[in-house]
Length: 270
Image (cartoon, rainbow, N blue to C red; front, top):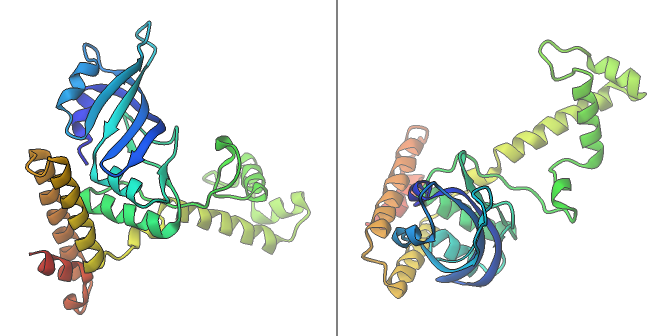
């Protein structure tokens, strides 16, 4: 996704807010810390970035810059084009563990973004959760009752190996039926696993969707004048390779390979 070069320049990179958001012209405020001997002028070589203004310059090395940056990347443009999804402030950042990109919006539109992300790269994790109207710290996939039960079970040693307490003992302490506690703990584990390994990972890329997304990317590149850029060409080749790899992997399990929509996508794209 073109993230690699950022590590040569930034130690930390965090999305703060939008300033303008239309396809091919997405302007955002970012909080950044540069690597030693690096600064805003070093961003000129980044393909998808353009520093428009230094909003705040740090007074010491432990403080961060505030930069107004224009982004022009396929996923960022698609996010703007959906007219329903948006990046979440404070939840989109680059650090030593990689890139975290958190987007909120309707499920059908989020699926398009997840499809493009998997076309371009291979994310370690794609997950989906419902939006709760609460403070950021309170957002969780579990209900408050489930959180309380899970916390109690954890404190009593239920999740240790070996367990320090049995389900029947938890039930006695809480004054509930053993079957009720067992069912609730199973639901908690299922919810957490679904959050980690969401069904968004299994969204089918139909030939029509793949073709539409790639045409959109090419049109954006032509309009913005970077269609001949080496980074863009490399990304398009990477997409083709990823689709072929997924198609080959699916063939190992399909009794009828011709039914694979990715294989059909490749033929149509060729």
